[in-house]
Length: 148
Image 1 (cartoon, rainbow, N blue to C red):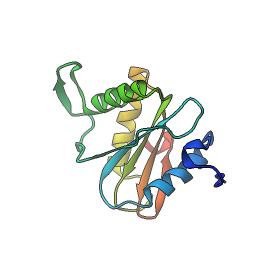
Image 2: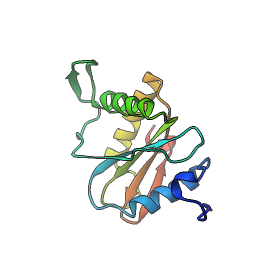
Image 3: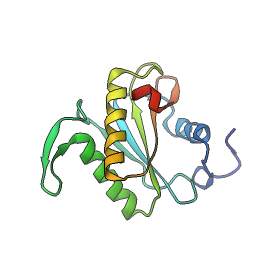
Image 4: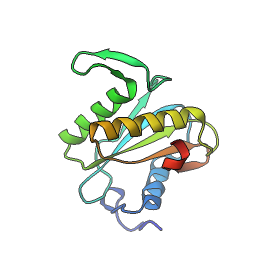
């Protein structure tokens, strides 16, 4: 159970269940399709900033030409940019939340994005702590066996 006596940003979230509980407090259920980028600091606490991204592409594997990256997938671009923010803000890792209306079951789109972001993070050596779905009734963690 998450300690409710300390401010959210001062809670060490070393257990995934604690992280899920805090994300659920912050997001309070889904109301549209968007991705949230969260950061964890070196203590294991929620870092800053928290970034919502709406209108992200349907296909994470779509190739795009980016001046500083070349021809890469959308997932590669997202992870590269998230990591640049992580480094600039001195955070230790990244947490992704896929908000969308619906139940807690991982959809094909959820699995596709999670798999592609996991692969991009691995390829680029980016510390991706966890991925979650924010759905109608709460927040659910996406585990590797959900999308690999």
